[in-house]
Length: 502
Ligand SMILES: Nc1ncnc2c1ncn2[C@@H]1O[C@H](COP(=O)(O)OP(=O)(O)OP(=O)(O)O)[C@@H](O)[C@H]1O
Ligand SMILES: [Mg+2]
Image (cartoon, rainbow, N blue to C red; front, top):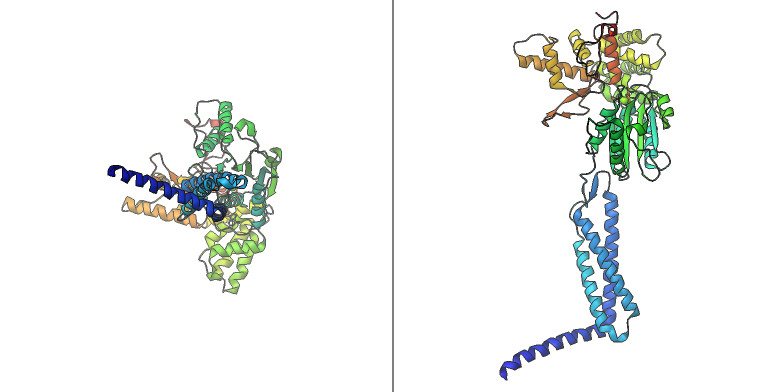
């Protein structure tokens, strides 16, 4: 008998404990419901706050942390369940209050738990590995604010899908587009930004490859161009919204043959091209955006920002400066090149002399494009002969080519452009100082795109602006015949050599 008493007492205790809880639900039902409503409102408010925080932090190349996504799922589950409970409560009979009370209490506790889990440390975002988000290096931009804003607004709006940025060589089209590209990285509108440098030597296979590479896809070299175009357009279709920037287009081409999808209001994609030719923009049906020259004031700001403000206190120099800037006709490339060779000069006589010389170069030239040539040639002529030779050698590389510094110096040494010295190391150092001089004179641009070779070793590179390269080719037209990216295996036929080639 005694053995039975213990378990019976346990059962009675259990029943009475539960019964008292059920009685509590029955008696304090209203309090339970109030607590439930409070938890429901708190959780909902937290969900809205976190959503807003996500919105604030979200921009190109970022995605919400997995734990945040999972938390949102849980919130949705608990709030949906709470809605069912609420419906039951509103229809519930007085007699079932104790059962309902239990349901209400359980839902309240679950919502409180999820609420407590919604405390995330640090940012709610991580990098999205499926997007390519690289900031393109640009110089500090002066002016061109309106045109940059216009392009940006077309990209962010829904009305215009294809934008053609045009203007003469060296006016800043590439620089402006890089700036807009970098601004888009801070937005969440596009999933991908694709940059392709087209250049004069339009090679559809190379360009298709560049795009697929950026999409982390693969195209076989052996396939027919049409098949490749089909594959590329399929790849692009799968990307969601993107901006494709085709820089430096020289002639019009068919987007379909290439495999580039036309933007529609549904696919959310945009195309931008930059070109010197208004005809390209028109014939390809893009919306034209004209890049204007810098105003005199902007040109002056650009010159001053590069030349060093220490020359300003001298009023004589200021007046010389105005003359030089006016001669550049608001063309950024002419300005930065002239700054290059006048930087650090504080002697008014040197300025005066330089202005006389510069005028000699551009006297009677009214066409701005030819004036740029004059400014570049002026800068080139002020180099030492050895540096001139080394500079001209760079024009042998194809247009828009990332020239690996180490390799270039090696070539200079092999070609005997650098005089013999006591050690190879000193000759290499001399090569680097020539490179630095060319960079400071803006005849080479520093490390636009540093390159990685096949073994992924980081290599520093230089880039020759295409207008500068044209000038170098013009200077060397009697000495070199340059046929870049033609995969030449033997010497061109005699009739291709110009008559006056030495
Ligand atoms: N708004 C600007 N502010 C400061 N520097 C600028 C600006 N625009 C251009 N530059 C400078 O001028 C140089 C030439 O500009 P950029 O290469 O953008 O010209 P482009 O119009 O693309 O020429 P091309 O038709 O030959 O491709 C740049 O390397 C940059 O240093
Ligand atoms: Mg350009």
